[in-house]
Picture 1 (cartoon, rainbow, N blue to C red):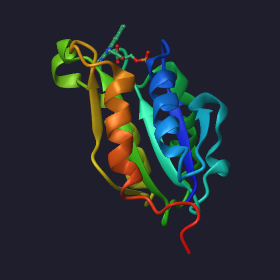
Picture 2: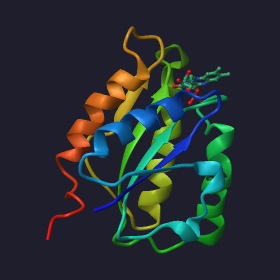
Picture 3: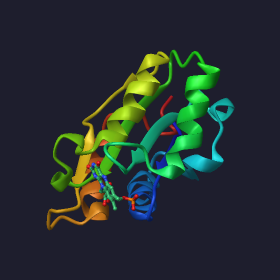
Length: 153
Ligand SMILES: Cc1cc2nc3c(=O)[nH]c(=O)nc-3n(C[C@H](O)[C@H](O)[C@H](O)COP(=O)(O)O)c2cc1C
């Protein structure tokens, strides 16, 4: 199954993470990467597996790059039954209760429309010594193991 990676970012960490995930999935999952701000709800296809990468801004809010897509989900209210997705969120523990809310908000919006979240929900902590792309690489390996390869019959 092909993988569509959507990233929502404010300052670029999410894009680095999306690239790292694509590198892992390139072997078997024909990944494509889109900035969420340039992706439309109409482009969602249940034949693809969706990977959502999203940081957190403000006080537990979405980064500006994710807002247009999130608003379109609320406005259009598409039926996403049959769409499967996984989430890798970015945040920082110094923000306490709002840690990694951005990725969680996207998961809630997709689930509310009937899509199904699979795999571990990744949560990067920018206060940790772990680099976002390094953690995302490990996470992507776990996702690659649960999504059927492109050429599986
Ligand atoms: C002004 C500001 C507000 C932030 N608010 C939160 C927050 O509420 N919760 C959280 O977990 N991280 C928060 N963060 C941390 C970012 O999500 C984190 O640095 C992330 O790696 C940024 O990824 P990006 O470059 O893809 O946007 C905030 C960062 C900034 C600069």
